[in-house]
Image 1 (cartoon, rainbow, N blue to C red):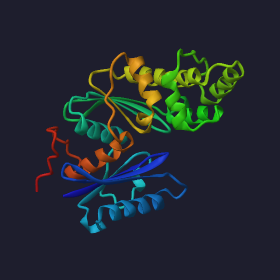
Image 2: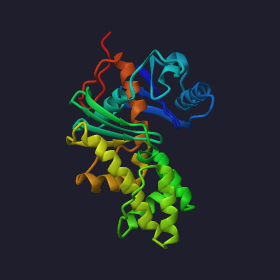
Image 3: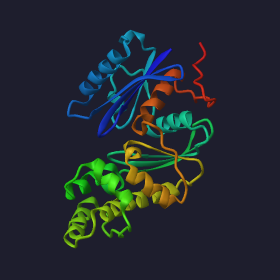
Image 4: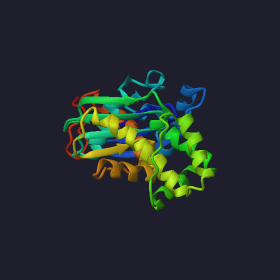
Length: 270
């Protein structure tokens, strides 16, 4: 059985196709003004990549901020539900899932079957999301990938007093004028985001193992900041931005029923 998950994120749309326990195709595109149309085009592109037709897909589930307009969807699953399902499927030992994307961060506490026990969301301020790093990279006039990479080379982190991305950008400009090394500025920015996210996650309780997913999971500067801030290792999947779509595809395959964590996918009984 082949199922699909569509993650209608605020910044990007992700589509993932799942056949039994194997991901057979996936794709990502920026979320534009015509979100549903963009999702339909991406869905068709991923189908073409896999050599499939729409009628080959047994079920489609949507998730994300725009889940209710996900095209071809037979059902939906909440962001936190999809995150938990996807993370537990990849890492059965995980009990805390941290999802940091372009617009918000989420901390999720779940059990061994991927059932959500508690969660917290940071959706009020860009200072706890990927948008913050993009703004700071622009202030330093460098690509985001380089901005993330140089954080690892820093010799120190400078406390950032601003609690808002707008004011923090002014603070970064002041640091530049003070000839503070860009490496140290980058680490300071990533540490500030990590501090906000960790504070949020502690409200639901930190329990090992911890998975870090979402677009910021691909940011090595942020991953390093999270590890140092938590004082422990975190598990990061190969494609952290697709975990929500994976969870939606798993939900589609089970009709929303909890996925059994055995290292293999258990299809819904007929």
